[in-house]
Image (cartoon, rainbow, N blue to C red; front, side):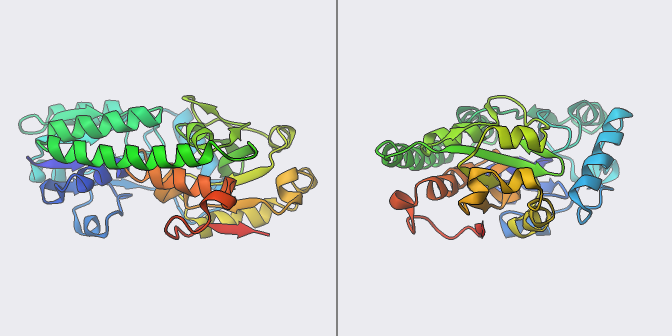
Length: 303
C-alpha cells in the first residue's frame, strides 16, 4: 500500500506499526522517527515558526477569519506519489490541512486514493485510531501488540498514582500568548497521573483564556506544553510573561512548581507518544512515586 500522511501523529502510528517503507510522503511537520525526514514533503505553511507566539496567534486568527487554509498541498507531487491512502484529520485546522481541501483534491488524483479522517478527542479515541490504521494497512497483529504495550504503560501509571497522598490542582497550557487551556485527551492524562486539571476540560477543544482565568483556578502545578513547540522554544515565551503580577501570585509559581515540556513531540500529537506525555505528567505531579522511573524527555523546570 502507498500511504501519504498529512499528520505527524498518523506518521508516527504508521512507523510504530513497522510500515515506514509504505509511507510515500509526509507533511512538512512530520519529524519522528528520524527516518521520515527523508520522505517527500507534500504540505507547506507560510507561518513563521520562529516568530513570537503572539504574532503567530494573530496570523492564524486572521487567516482563519478570512476562510483561508493555513497550509498548501503539493498537488503535482501527490500525483507523482500515487497514494492509495491519505491519512489526515479535521480536529484542528491549525494542525493539518483542512479536511475539505484534502478530500476535494484527492478526488482529482489517480485512483482516487481513500482519505481517512483521524479525529480523536480522548485517549481511547487515540487507541481506536491505531486499530483503524493497522486494519487499513494490513498490520492488525502489529496494531494489537502496540496497543497492548501502550495500555500496559497507562495502567502502570494509573495504579501507581492511585496511592498518592494528594491530588494536586493542575493547569496545563497549550499556548502562552494568549494563554490557551489544554483540551481533548490532556485533562484525562492529568487525571490518570493523579491530578485534577482545573482549566481545561476533557474531550473539549483547547480554549483561549485570560491570565486572570488562569490565576483564578489557583494551580498548584503549572505545566507548559505549547502546541508545535519544543520545551526550549516555549521557555522563551514563558520568560516574557512570567513577570506579570497575576502570574507571580499563582501558587505554582510561588512554590517553584512550573514545568515546561516538549508539547510538539508529546502532548499535541495523538499517536503512540501520547503515553510518553502521560509519563511526563506523572513524574511532575508525583515525583515521590515516579522520579527517575521514565526516560529523560527534555523536561525543563522553571525556577
